[in-house]
Image (tube, rainbow, N blue to C red; front, side):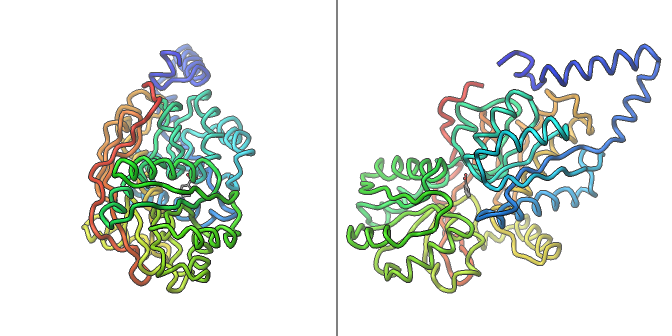
Length: 401
Ligand code: BEZ
């Protein structure tokens, strides 16, 4: 990466800005030019799934982000926001083309996206080459804040590794000696499996089987039959959105609920409990958000979200809200002047985000350092049971920044 890119400048943007200033200076209009620029809206690209199994997640992130903007009077750093929206369909094959629609066609100042790890990987090349500011409000691909880390890449959610690593300690404390992991066959599932395996084996546990279904399929029957015959001490799962709801119902229908305890990263139960009857009851998960935190910030956020959208927020809404808060921190530091990119990045890197999950800071690789809660489904909530791991930082393997 060039020195300019490290400082948050990309060559195209720098040349454009330099040429414009030269012209403005030559015709003696530098002050009006700056004023006109300040009056323009900040262009925010939302690249999220608005169709398919992760639709609800994309909508919750959008709602959360817009709530953070509305709480600031509809302006960030003194400038209004204009949205450019792309439905990425959770389709990795279309990710570069979709990211380019926002970068090349719409010339956005910042991209907020996405949910699916494979799509995030497809976006990363476009983002790194263009130098466009990127705030990732969900997709956990470890690489994004690992080998692909860059000054213009930020995440307000988690790395996949982070979400399951603390489960090893949890299972050990329950006396489970072995476990089976079941998930979708793609980066998020595989990396959450690896995060769990590392944590569980450090505690002396053994992961005895990895079971996969292709994304976004939800045909679990054959694998549930296999689990019944293996009879592990515990099952650990990653599914999310519509797939998580179907898995919880199928686990119960297969007669496994109450026989083999079910655990997971918290996506297994967040935002799906209204759809599953009592199939989620008692399921324990780890995540950086939980119901029942009962803090001033979380209570205020939940009330504002419920009033605005007539919906209860979930972890995805929190991550979108915090993407808005992080962008606000950057834009406020430069009074909305996005050409001061290095200054803006510095402010974002050093921000302490007052999140509904609890306040957090970013690691050197721009990933949240955050508490991982142990949660248990009670009725329609994933109720906090305690902190499973305090201030867990992703190892950021391969990040050179
Ligand atoms: C992912 O693909 O990174 C992901 C999707 C949904 C929930 C959590 C992670």
